[in-house]
Length: 173
Image (cartoon, rainbow, N blue to C red; front, side, top):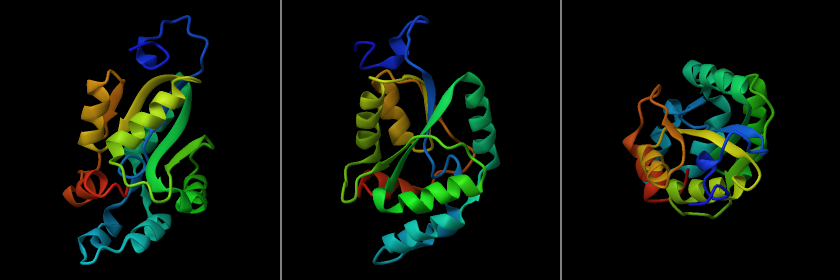
């Protein structure tokens, strides 16, 4: 993989700005209060995403974000659908998280998170040097790591099998 495709291969003289990429749900936002919508039959996706406005900030995620800011800029990359942009930006602001580019899943995109996030990283790598991607989804972390991306698994909120099924099988978050 070339440095343009894989920023982890770039040298110290790389002129691109250094960034850490953060997932939101399960990394910065505590989604546990809304998982019941995904266990329901049928699943209540609109309610699941609408209630994201009430997520608590995960202290470990906020601390990791502060550390990342000492190394460079941050970018948010979430599997949330585009229609939740305003809600998500207000949530970030309400919790005092820095304004930063926010990349979201296109409405109607049902590809697995591991596929959508890898595609966004490849595009981002043309403009920035990615220091690491922080995600709570083990499938995303495995896929990115196997492709040579620098990635960290966020383990401060136990990963939900319900959420993982939604991410992998249904391409919803």
